[in-house]
Length: 150
Image 1 (tube, rainbow, N blue to C red):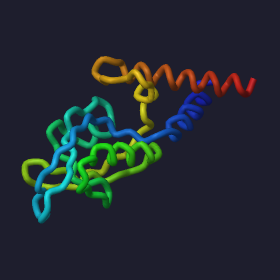
Image 2: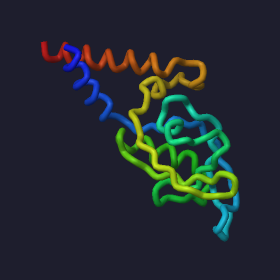
Image 3: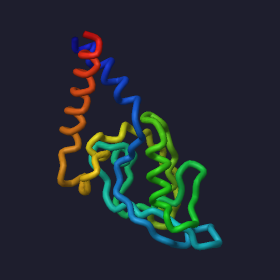
Image 4: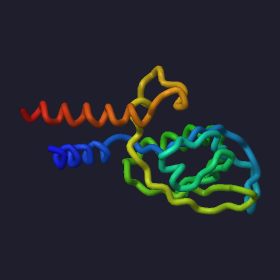
């Protein structure tokens, strides 16, 4: 039964929206080697045990691009979030990070967006046990899968 549970949960983890694990704020700035002011995303928070934390992204880092995207409109944070959510878990993305005046590429493999983040009342990830919530969501998915086949 444990092997079956792992296989079903692997399917669960491949479905849904992409997730990176950062809190964001929008800013406008002149990026090194760019001639015009553009919209960037400041990382305000990095959730532990997420793709962002594993990739070494730090609070204060500035995201200046996602894959080939850069932003000039003020809503870069919203476009970034929509793009990440539209991707599937296990998708690899390249973040262009500005840190200490240097831009570097950081490869990040997305995970499934935690189900708790999809609830309309959810506001602050620090106040909730995301790992516990995900364990419960995985177990509920497995039980539903078994019930549908019984």
